[in-house]
Amino acid sequence: MNNQKIYLTQEGIEDLKKEYAQLSKAKRPEILERLTQARNMGDLSENAEYTAAREELSFIDGRIDELEELLKKVVLIKEEEHKVNGKSVIQLGSKVVLHKDGKKEEFIVVGEWEANPTEKKISHESPLGKALIGKKVGERVEVEAPVGKIVYTIASVS
Image (cartoon, rainbow, N blue to C red; front, side):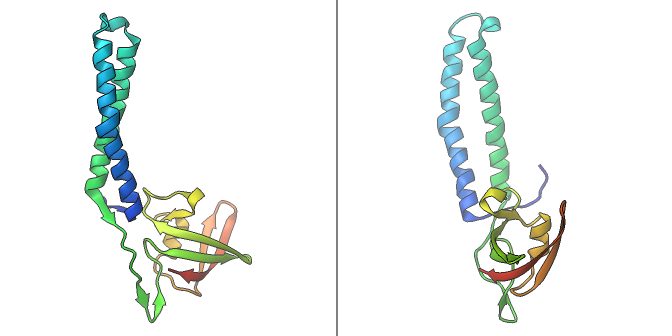
């Protein structure tokens, strides 16, 4: 991983810390115990349990390393309101209500690691996220999508 910053909400940071704690304090010791028991069974060359435990330990160690790197690069998305000329401006962490063809859609603009379209969390790096950053209520944004150009009107920002 390079030195890029990882933008996360407080909830996203807590989720990474929980996963890290669960892997390092519960899952890894459990796998080490399985590995020890499997090693004590004898011939390691034909021991499927030993091989499986080693592979799982390798995977967990890799994920622990990845989480440690992520947590070093995390920048907290502060939920403070930015205003320009009395109007809220969309930024990381903003909750945005958009109008499209008479329908309302609500999104939260988050960092790419936290993005989850099913939860209406869009990355600031996505086409829609890029189009929204810095915009205010009442402005229109156009986004190129596979189905063509989509036009949104910003209804509210919080």
